[in-house]
Amino acid sequence: MPVPKGSSLDPDRTRAAILHTAEGILYARGLDGVGVAELCAEAGISKETLYRHFGSKEGLIRCVLEARSDRVIRWLAQAAADAGDEPANQLAAVFDALGAWFGEPGFRGCAIVNAATQHHDTPTGTIASRHLGRYLDLFTDIATRAGAAHPAALGRQLLLLLEGAIVVADHLDGPVAAGDAREAALALLHRAASRPADG
Amino acid sequence: MPVPKGSSLDPDRTRAAILHTAEGILYARGLDGVGVAELCAEAGISKETLYRHFGSKEGLIRCVLEARSDRVIRWLAQAAADAGDEPANQLAAVFDALGAWFGEPGFRGCAIVNAATQHHDTPTGTIASRHLGRYLDLFTDIATRAGAAHPAALGRQLLLLLEGAIVVADHLDGPVAAGDAREAALALLHRAASRPADG
DNA sequence: GTCCCATCGGACCGACCGGTTCCATCTAAG
DNA sequence: CTTAGATGGAACCGGTCGGTCCGATGGGAC
Image (cartoon, rainbow over all chains, first blue to last red; front, side, top):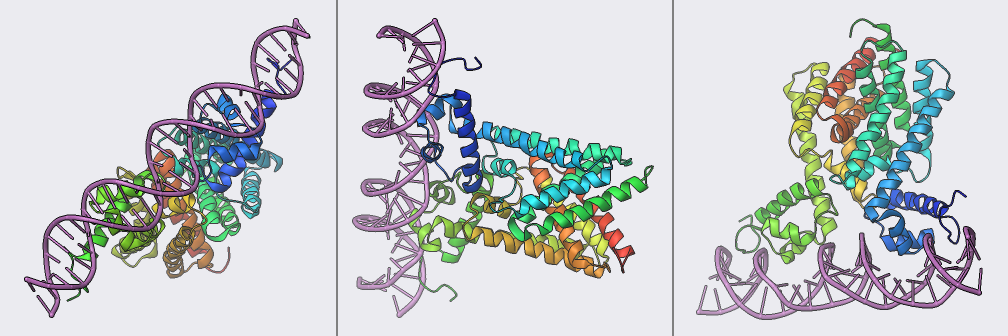
């Protein structure tokens, strides 16, 4: 049996349900905008269960954010992979995927960056750094395969466009930002690839 | 007399002192990370004085953010103006100024965007929109004077670089982001100016 | 001197917070 | 059946929150 101890249902299932419910509410209302009591009520569990699984509200937040980071990175990497082998097409696909996300109701920016902004001194900040680093890996890989002269620098610039697009989409003009970012990203990629020996 | 009623010192002076102290603490610790009592203690005033001047904590936050937005925009516009008339030089100067800011101890991202992230449903969100719009005006002006084919689109792309740089500097690599953004911004400007009839 | 009023210091309020504990209950393993 | 562990429900804790109110002080304006 994969279930180590007996219980009414499945502890792993319970844990996953808590994470899923908490992710939505914490994203929509902010880390400090919702109390543990409400999270438990929405998830249909007791506070004792939550504290047995996650130890503290901060522990729950950490697990939620790590799961979210994994999912977001996998989603963008898949969007790139689905676009074929051409780096430019992959880059365009990434920003197209972002545009679709920006247009969804309830879009409120990047949950991980938002969380780090709200609790900047906690381990949450570390999760955000790792998250941005994973974006960077994705972009640097694309830049490298595109033959950019300085793939690391181009990767960082593409990351600026991604993060800028998220912020601007959240606070100013929604999905429009994704189109602007896409166009700028392709321009930077083309420039770097057409000058492989020099900037 | 500019002072309407008698008081121990000067109500306007008191108000400005509250704003100054509150701005620093709210920026460093977050909107929900500090209570009204502590803000009053640090500013050397009583809660009654704070509530008479600002009505509520939200009212205080609103005044702090509006003052901050004014100051930041004026600071960047001045940096551009000090760089002469050449649009490319002005753009470079803006990102150089950002780089200096990113390196300052206590840098924590954009106070206005951070605030909107923390209290997204309050009027704070409106302040953030206006703030980004003012950046946009600055960049669109530079793009127009540079002879860009689509100055509005270029302005929005430059805004993406600025906001992205702030986020990345805050959560990943500090002042490096400003240099990357500067280089990308100049590349986008050059591209748009050298193709004034077509993208 | 006499008012006026901004101010301070602090008591006070109700609400909510994160977190702990106890207990009855249910389920699955043996 | 017995037993052990996971659970829900709820009471409870100390602390903090934003906000109000009151008494005392002290400096202009007249």
